[in-house]
Image (tube, rainbow, N blue to C red; front, side, top):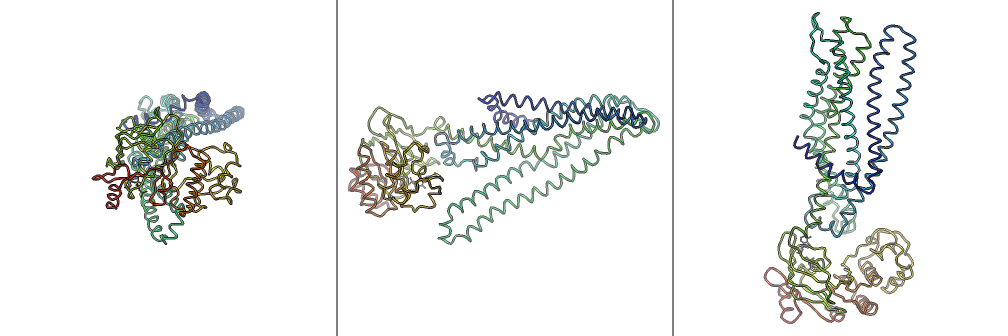
Length: 586
Ligand SMILES: Nc1ncnc2c1ncn2[C@@H]1O[C@H](COP(=O)(O)OP(=O)(O)OP(=O)(O)O)[C@@H](O)[C@H]1O
């Protein structure tokens, strides 16, 4: 019970916001109409149940006129039923897509807000595979919540209506054993209840492990898919290293978990189906057996008997709602748990700054970037880099060097404001625009022109300007292919990607440009040409580079070393001593 109310609280937390959103009137309106239609269907079922009594009584009495009239009534009821059922489904689907659209936009917004998606990964995110949450889980949540919610409502109303009918019928057909009437008020109701509750209880007992098994299955399937995607994305590396056999081993190992869990699901489902199928079969005959003594003692008519059978079936259907919906209920709870995990993870990643001491990145009135008492840590709390009273003046050209793994890239991440682990502060001039160029720039799949100007949107930069920038960085061939669609990270060599990265920097013209080994894959003369190009085109920009090549010194006005100090590195001014120390550390 506690579990159910906890699940319902979570469902309300996930579902509620849509019905309070800007689309609330459409959502509430559609939901209201669908509920009204669901109730209309229950009402028609009640009328059909009463119709059954009159119809079979007419048959038993060979009353042709009554028979013909009942046929017309049936046609009227059936026609209404079909019309309501069709539009109930149609409007339900309409509500589903509107709700799903809103929820997807909402989740995408929160996941992509700031660097939440990145922080979720850094924190060793427990809500694995956000792609699955935002696609399948959102879709299934909306679908199943409506199916189960409306099913529950319809069951409750059906139960109430047919309990009244069965109660009345019980008075007509008292329990008749060995020639004596035993009067138990509403005994047909009690029979139906006991039968259904017994069935529900046993089903829960047999089917409970399916909840967890289904949850695990989704996880294993998603892991398997994710690893296949990784192979596809890294197929060149794998082919070069002849890693196919290792990959096959890893993939089959992961697929093994899918299979093993599936066997467990099969075995449990077999037991559950054996029970629910037997239960369903027995339910067909059970009510007739119960009222047969009264019928054969001629205490009731065929019409009463048929109406009892159908009313009994409806009460039991309503009560057995959990029996028949068991599987979907189990899946639904698993979906709710996954969406809940996703929401928790998003909000925990988004609110890291509010909960833990973090690196404060603030806009200031000053003209320089200043690092004060900065200690950058790893996600597990280990200290990595420290910097204090370190300033980068406007238009300066700074080269940061130091051993591999000393934390240079992580320091850049901290300055960009996406690395929250650590303490201290980073001040950035109020209106300064920063741009980070990594060693491997990211290009969205699509037209080349859009890939170059990313994250600016399509059409915001004139094609001639893009073509000119590509010419300037030595890629005239690509300047003619701006409209061509492609997966540019796969098509272009790393050196070419780095040239495109610099073209992006020329087009965005940031005030501060951070180059994290952004030209490391180019030959030295080309690297030199590109640095001279940056100096010529972006004379006011401050450039901070990370690089290992000594040839880079010529393009920078200051060189700063990462100096080892115990377990961490300190960002300090370059000098003979520092240089010697870092060399020794290598
Ligand atoms: N997300 C992360 N989780 C845990 N450790 C990390 C993470 N990112 C980086 N590290 C660790 O932080 C250390 C510094 O990494 P970083 O990439 O900043 O080094 P670097 O000085 O730029 O190295 P290189 O010169 O090789 O590029 C490394 O030991 C790395 O393993």
